[in-house]
Image (tube, rainbow, N blue to C red):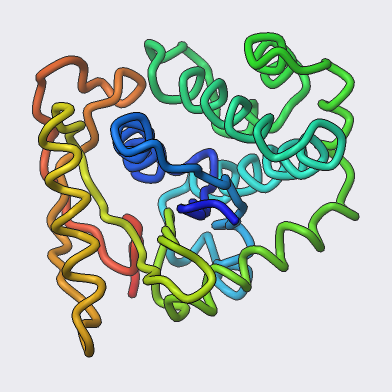
Length: 238
């Protein structure tokens, strides 16, 4: 079993930033990581998107579910390591590239968007056929439920499970800046120590900087605008 289970939705910018930090720690500590699925669209299946979220959220979350179908088929046909390569290529295309004019959230759930990403990950373009295969939603739902069983339901993405099956699990950490290599290890040790403390449940503030991601207009050492999030997202209503 892997040292870390990392549950991700590919359209979540905070999950992507945290995943880059986890890859830093993985390289320094020689940890193994299993990349598993959690769908924000399924987590919010009961929510009226029009009433509770900014207008682009439903299309974005739906695209995320469609991309997770591709990830599920990738794992079935090419093994779990291929999911890590696919997620790396998806995150780079979605978040570490300059914004594209007219690059609407729904486009991320199309074959035209995902096929060049499959090329970059060294995977066959035929995997894009999974975008429309809703039979794969059962796998995504099962892993979403698995993740939420570890933390409770009032969370977002990512969810990390360290030293499964008995080890600690938690939502986040939500970070907007990528630490340096030494800081990455220090942050990891602090997070794990806190999560392991008996009875610990939550340490939180809803003010977040927009992550240092080119697609969000925050590149290099820039500092993103601070926004007030609640319920794990920029909801219009609680």
